[in-house]
Length: 307
Image (cartoon, rainbow, N blue to C red; front, side, top):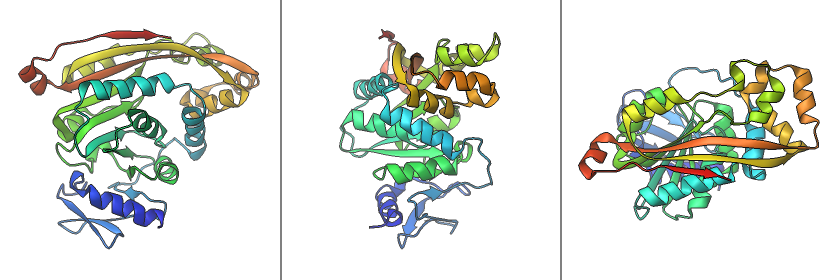
């Protein structure tokens, strides 16, 4: 079976979670070739196994090399293992995983590796992932590597996802659109957002930059915006270090936009080390719609995990 047909069959099974990004009407899969709405707007499946639902041209600064480096770091090193484990625990703790199907959307999924690792960690057979990203390069790579999920090129601002169709929304180190999150989320669904804390990739920042704004992450406004739109069920602080080898360090530099404006000499000095301890300092925010939280009397929780 070709990737194109396999993708079309998978989308057919879950076509109810789609809506046309142009007219917002319902969609159907026709001849295992196209996703077509009730007003005949047509989006073809690609031979790589994804659907391009963009309604306008878009240029992404994220190139194939960046996504390939990111895939290698996420799938072949254990830099983010604790993050994936923590997200999987949150899904199981705050969501009834007996829903069939249980739909998970990763918005801003890149090449899809975080989504795949989290679903693997959850070990829930009826859980289906949909990855959405504006980058065709990233989605093409996701479709090539991870055939059991649905991959879409699309813009969150004109989302091709239907109202109240997802149980979990993942937003990992990526911009948010809370209006859309609340629209596509089921009433008791979760938004899980991962944001950097001040010491995230500290060693890389210290090496590449002098004292300036790129040395420090500030996330106060991001947290405030999350709490403005959603009821905060849980916040987890993950802080730990991992030893990366020389190949990993090169991939780390290649996967981060930090290197775009850094001095080449500093980059070379960093990636020519035999190994280095790298700090991961992240916050995981878990939220639900405020209307649901008010009705259920949900309480705040807080955790800090330092490895």
